[in-house]
Length: 167
Image (cartoon, one colour):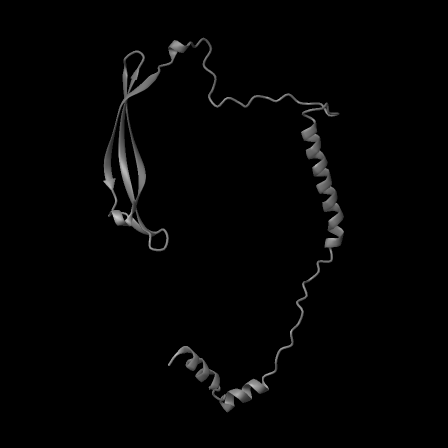
């Protein structure tokens, strides 16, 4: 059977009759009338509009005055900007740079303490990833300008992302 014969055969077919129970239910069910959706009107918005517009206008005027004051003199006096407060307290009176010790790092070694088995995360369709947590111990040795040494140990945590096909 070719396509033309199939199309002719399908055109000649008629749909099956509806069951009488379904037909009666469809005929007796009332069709709801389409109603226009009415959005509620906030009645006080007519009173709030003018004050909001005035506030926006005053804000715009203040903004434009602030921009134009950098190029032209303004009617209001300008206050000199104060420098921000110091984060560190000032050095004691009579202190010289020689009173401070300066240390420079000369050696650093990182040791892996722990590597978790990790969790599998679905990053996208058919792209699972494994997140592994590594804990490190960093040993750093510093030397001062007076040839004294200082040793410092810190721990840090690092998360490693491994593509699933590399496992």
